[in-house]
Image 1 (cartoon, rainbow, N blue to C red):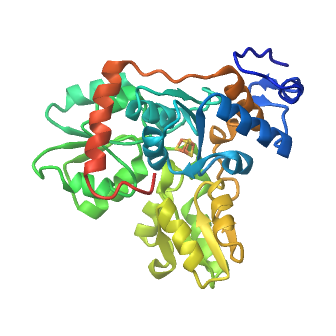
Image 2 (image 1 turned 180 degrees about the vertical axis):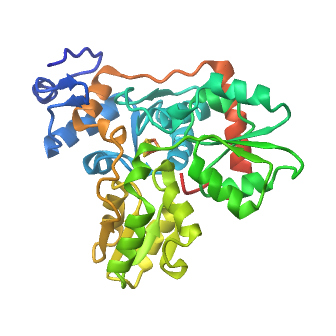
Length: 353
Ligand code: SF4
């Protein structure tokens, strides 16, 4: 179905011609190819709108290439807060754009397609958490950042995969902990900290199923000279983090890395080939960082369909229409901001998410 577009901006003939091909279907906006002409229009419209374009590492290559900044969700939220532009176009999934809005309430935050959700964030609602808290009065709530703004508002401390252990260790050992929503990260943290009074929500990301233990072990066995990078960002590879700790692959071959750490390790590796356990979007950044290394996904089906909803067409439409705007009510944002700020104050939060 073609879609009608409305905009207060100056639209060139090129914009109008490109938009004429825009379609909207169940899988999102489509119909516009990522040509140099498209990229030029995207850059022009971003300037007209006084917007900066941020792209998560798991975005399509063309979205990463046209963005002002590429990174993990927290790094991007920080960039959003410091940006001089009044509008942030967040190319990622909805909870990430919400986090950017929580940290920069005065800015307009757009996501090119608000249908880009997250199965992990959706695995716990605010009502679920209220009930869990009511059953465990006095427990400290620790949430992975893959949660909605409402869940963050009910959380004591947020965490990333990089600082989850530090966050849990910072809590009084006598206090019970409710850890959510990622069961693999929770199991990893429980094992590393040895904490017994920690309950884990049974949430998971659908993409992790593409990175299972058998596949990981088999790939390591059949590529004996390759390094193995595990990037537990965004829930998709927290199962690999857990499996590496379980001994599914030889410990000395595995490097558990944040985004920045992974790019540094890519530039520094002496290996000709590197197997990467993460969502496939990360391969684009790695290949750019170290073009002479052969980066292969542990499973090339480990792709997040929500991340891939931010298409060339969705981004163009977003800039033209100023849509879809992300709103978080001020009270929820203020409570959510506290849990995110507590996370930032504890340990390293610069990578991993
Ligand atoms: S990769 Fe998983 S955790 Fe990340 S956005 Fe997609 S569904 Fe959510």
